[in-house]
Length: 150
Picture 1 (cartoon, rainbow, N blue to C red):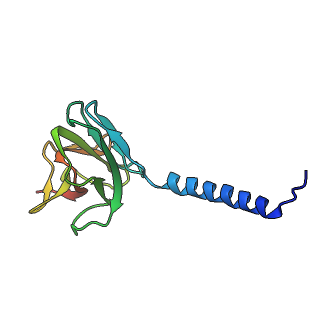
Picture 2 (tube, rainbow, N blue to C red; picture 1 turned 60 degrees about the vertical axis):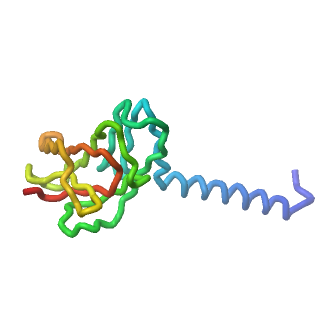
Picture 3 (cartoon, rainbow, N blue to C red; picture 1 turned 180 degrees about the vertical axis):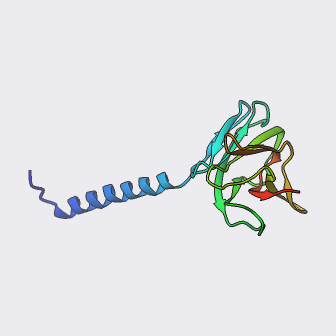
């Protein structure tokens, strides 16, 4: 049925197209996860970096997200990731995992985190070459990367 208001059709089409583009743009950006006292997991958009928050590590819900960022440490291997909001602290250690499947690393690597006095290797370092994952424990959110350790 033809419309007596051609401008109305164009306006509706523009609104629908704008909504579709907004949906596409939001789908491309990491919205993050709300994680609280029950714990939960969060992974980067590329799936290479993840954080596993155990139950009891947070007292309240926190909206967490991971962004790939430019590495401030020149000796990092691969990408660096910021887990937001930076500086969030935990009551229990969280597990940080960095997948290294195509990076040809050896056991002398570790996940590093930016601290107030520079970059530090995360404690509980575990290099699982069979599964191609490097693990560490963190007590606060920061920027993380992968680097050789001594």
